Amino acid sequence: MRVGGAMIPDTIKEWGGAMAVVFSIGGIIYSWLTRRSKENTETIAKMGEDISGRLKVIEKKLIADDRRIQHLEDNFKHLPTKEQISELKVALTQVSTTVDSTNRTITRMETDIREFRKTK
Figure 1 (tube, rainbow, N blue to C red):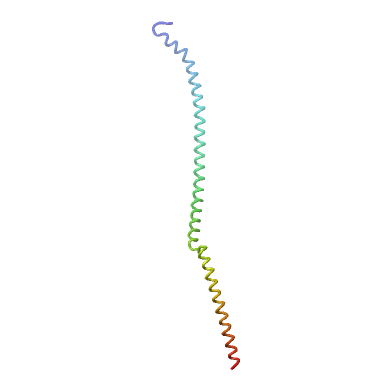
Figure 2: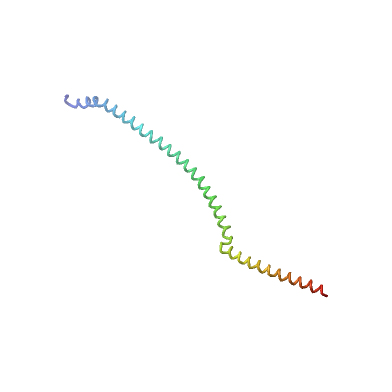
């Protein structure tokens, strides 16, 4: 041991080389770890852009489908319900019966008129 502070520079020389090696290894490890992080960040950014593009396409399709559905719903509002169709069938049957009855009556009247003319 030396007296008067000469020991400190010797200690620095002894430990300086080891410290340089430790810092170099630490720098290499840090670079290796952050390199993966940077690659992952870039990959995630690319995936985000890809997903964003896909979402825009999906959104456009959803808007188009929504418009078609709205158009169909608007058209279906004007169509009759099952109950209304059933009522129409009953009404048409009644009209058909009335027309048939009227037709028979007219046929009989026509026959009677022809017979009446023959007798004169």
